[in-house]
Length: 76
Image (cartoon, rainbow, N blue to C red):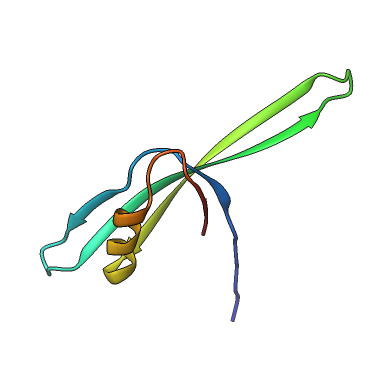
């Protein structure tokens, strides 16, 4: 069995999008931005931002849409 585990700490890029699928289950989609800052060989500050899409289902989707807002620091 293989396992890949990721912990993301970043800022919520947009308010969560909440929807209900035909079976009646709720789904929330959250975009999270993570940034990396470093100095290159010339001493210039560089920054790289990556965006991640997180999908939450059921009760976690309800909690996500209720408490998360754009700009908040979050850990998944």
